Amino acid sequence: MPVKKEPFFWLTLSSAGIILAFILLPLVHVIAAPSMESLWETFNDKDVRKAIWLSISTSGLAAIISLVAGTPTAYLLARKEFPGKRLVESVVDLPIMIPHPIIGIAILSIAGRNHWFGRAIQSIGVEIMGTTTGIVTVLTFVGLPFYINTVKAGLESIPERLEKVSRSLGASQTQTFFRVVFPLAWRSMLAGLIMCCARAISEFGAIVIVAYHPMVAPVLIYERFTAYGLKYSQPVAVWLILVSLALFLGLRFITLPSASKAKTG
Amino acid sequence: MIRIEQLSMDLPDFSLNNVDIHVREGEFFALLGPTGAGKTLILESVAGVGPVHSGRIFVDGAEITRLPPERRGVGIVYQDAGLFPHLNVEKNIAYGLRYQKKTEKKRLDWVKWLMERFGIAPLAGRSVENLSGGEKQRVALARALSVKPRVLLLDEPLSALDPAFREDLRNLLKELHSQLSLTCLMVTHDFSEALFLSQRAAVLNKGGVEQCGGVKDIFNRPASPFVAHFVGMKNVFPACGENGQVRVDCLNLSMPSNGRPEPKYAAVRPEHLLLLERKPVQDNQFGLFPAEIRGMVDYGIFCEVLLDYQDQTLVAAAAKSALMSMGLDAGAKVWVEIPQDRIHFF
Image 1 (cartoon, rainbow over the protein chains, first blue to last red):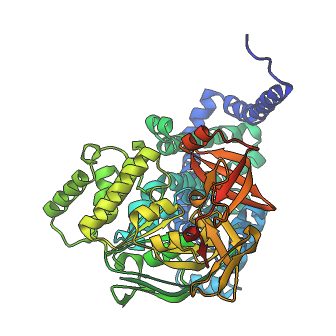
Image 2 (spheres, chains in turn red, green):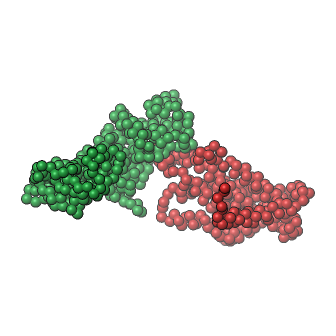
Image 3 (cartoon, chains in turn green, cyan):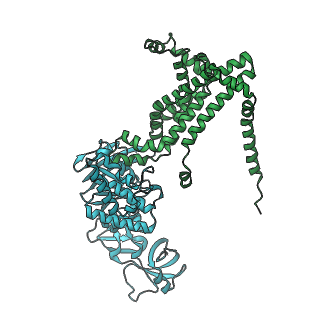
């Protein structure tokens, strides 16, 4: 006879059920609401396709920038102890905590002509306000903490001794990174890219201030909602959800360890 | 071969204080001490993968203190083997050969020879994650020796192994050391490993060297109560000397000093205490006193016998069969004899 379940078991089960319903109900409703005709019509809308592509390409670019710039920082935070480390970690986390319109305002305020930095980047032809560059800048800003924190956790799980052994066998620090650390950390780096990308694709608050045009998908959805109502914004939302889901599920599939590894691990 | 001079480091919860160690060429040297004594820190600073705040390290007469690890010619084997989990056995062993000036064929031949020498040739293509502890350590040793280091550092290489594998690897280490004339510096907290493998040793405690010298000398003549306890000399008592005599008052012992410097302590190994069922005929025998057995700790082949004498507790070790034939158990009264030549004063 099975052992009688305690009330705590039913509490965990019902809590999980409520949370799943809370997340899935609105999303399922959004996906199910538009008719096939309106979905097809939206798919053929050039502006929608352009906005979704812009969302994905700028998010992807922000993730790649995070990979290049964030990996060394994640390595430093995972491996070294130094005075002020906690402060650096807090600064890295700041974009998660600050309301995103403020991030937009902050970026604009230093990228404008009134700031030496703005004048400096404009003098070399870099324009932030109302450009794709501006969108990528904002997305990198909001996505970086997600990349750095994910990769840092992945690096911390790799024993530092492996690097020490590698060095004693004649490999330099760079060679050790590419021959030992990277092969063991690439899954967490890919997971970091996904996290960064996911955060970037959903960004609205900061983008709407820095670059309303060219229009990314969340801004387009917002515009259609305010101008034409729920019915016209829903199909765009569905396409953004489907494209993002396909992308993330694909990436997640790559990052999952193989079945045999999972068993032995 | 390895000379460590005044090595010090200050870490948030530990400091290493002016450590001086000299390991001779071809010597097997053991760094002994309990957990947290600073042994691994010293090893890693020689390998160049640990911090050095002050002091100098020399290998072969050349200073290596500020050299990057890859240019030191120092191999290291950790307790957990530290094998690269994404590489198979053969690739682990061949890892460092990329940085050696050898042709591809020579590299392959060398790896093959190492695998055969270490008895791991059948494992060549296996994932290192599926190896036993002993196999992992063999791979780690082969990998460390593949680049022909000038010095081999061993960080408790035997302590994570099952007893059978441990003995096997211990013999292999001894064999390799004598065959290849390796200079080895091994960290261990097990004195029996040091006794078996090394010629000289240093005992560390709280970041400082307590005693350094021949390993048998440390075993038989510890220089401090800490070292005495560490080498299993469990009976340590205060001692004093005056008028050409040394005395251990708590045991009512007194003997000629024979020119010994004034001692502070007297120590006796448990196996050197003799247990007698009844008082010997010679009444005035040296170091003879009655005691009561308080308890016994069974170690299988032998037992540790805890003895009460006045307000002192002594520890004796005796074969279990001997104790059984004497019919001794907790509460029994026995006579204890301490042979004069077995008492170590320091």
